[in-house]
Image 1 (tube, rainbow, N blue to C red):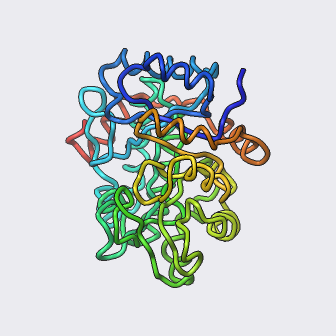
Image 2 (cartoon, rainbow, N blue to C red; image 1 turned 90 degrees about the horizontal axis):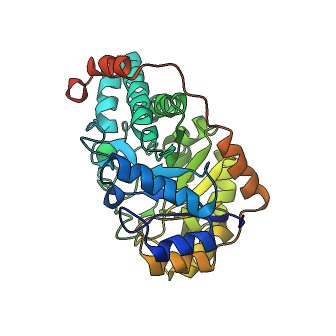
Image 3 (spheres, rainbow, N blue to C red; image 1 turned 135 degrees about the horizontal axis):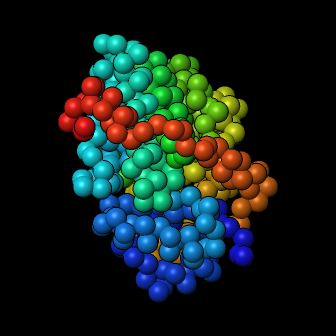
Length: 339
C-alpha cells in the first residue's frame, strides 16, 4: 500500500471520476472531506465514501464533514434534520447551564447517529471561537457565545457527544477566529489584540480542550505574535502558541487551502503549511488542478505527524448503547423543531 500523504482532499461531485480515482490511488491522501455538492441520497453517499476508502486501500480512513447545525450543515432533510446553530445552544446555556450542556451533548450525539449512517466518521465540530462585538459574521451564530466559559462547557459537551457515538471531533479554528473582522473565504484578517487579551479570551477554550484528538487552524494573522503570517503558515504561532501555550499535541490540520486568505499558488501553500508545523493540508473544493498542486508539495506522513495520525484513530470509541429515538425525544424537549 502507498504511504499516506499529509493531506485531506475533497472531490468534485457525487461520484468519483476516473481521473480522481487514479489520482487518489497514486497520491494516497490520509483522509477525505465531503461538502454539499457531494451529497445526494443515502446509497449514493455510502457508495462515494466506500469508493474513496477503496482508492487508498484503507477501510479505516477518516471521512470528514462540516455538520455543525444552523447555516453550516452539509446533510439536510431528509438525510438529517435541520439542527439549531451553536448560538441557540449558548442562549439555552445562559438561562440554564446544565440544560445547555445537555442539549449540546444530545445534538452532537444525534450528529453521530446521522453521520455514521453514511460512513462518515469525523465532524468538524466543536467551534471554539469566541467572537467579539463587530467581528465578521463568518463565525457569528456558529459560536456558542461571547464568553469563554460558555464555549468551553458547550464545546466539551459537543465533543463528548460525538465521541460517544463513535465519531471524532475537530475543534476549530485554533488558536481563535473570534476577533477576525474579515471573512477568510475572501481575505486575510489581521487581529491586533494584545497577547494577554488573546490568552485570556481567545485561546482559553482551546487550552481547556487541548486533550481532543484534532484541531483546525485559523487563517488569521495575530500581530502580537507573528505580524507577517497567518496561524496556518506561522511556525511561531504553531510552536509557541498552539503546541506550547495552549498545550495541544493532537493532529493539526489547516483550514481549507482554497480559501482566499492564503496567498500563493497551491504548491506554495502546501509547502508553507507543512513547513510551519501543521500535520495535514486540507483542500476542500474538489478542483482537480488545485488538488494536483497540493499533492505536488505534500510529503508522506512521518515522524510526530504520523504518530499523531495513528493516535487519532485510537480515539474512536465503541458506540454507547444510546437509542436514537430516545435521544431525539429528549433533544425535542429543548428544540422541538428537530424532533
